[in-house]
Length: 170
Image (cartoon, rainbow, N blue to C red; front, side, top):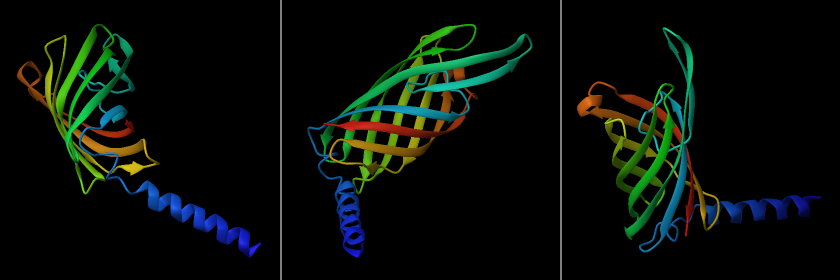
């Protein structure tokens, strides 16, 4: 029984050590494809997955969105990103886009700055930070916080979100 427990512990330790060695996943020339879930305030220019309800004078409306992002590492730990999404905002539909950059501090702490907007003329400056847990050579889970600062017609429409991102690195 002790040998079995020791073998399980050794396998778990080697998986953990291998999973946190992130240098290869964020190396120059690699691609990144990710989907994010947004918890908190609804964001009209989201390129992630979101679902929320809002109360209006006419009743409750469901707001939802779906999208994805992709990036290319132009140097170790620095990716240039773009994203596309679709959002059903209750009374209106909007297609959204995002362009920005994502930098992995120590290959494990992603920090992102981006500009996002939608077909309804809403635009936002996004700031995001979190932690990347690498589950092998190609997959990471990236929980983090995101702040969307409204610009132009969206001035004063700021949102704070808790995100959980799922990324493929290849």
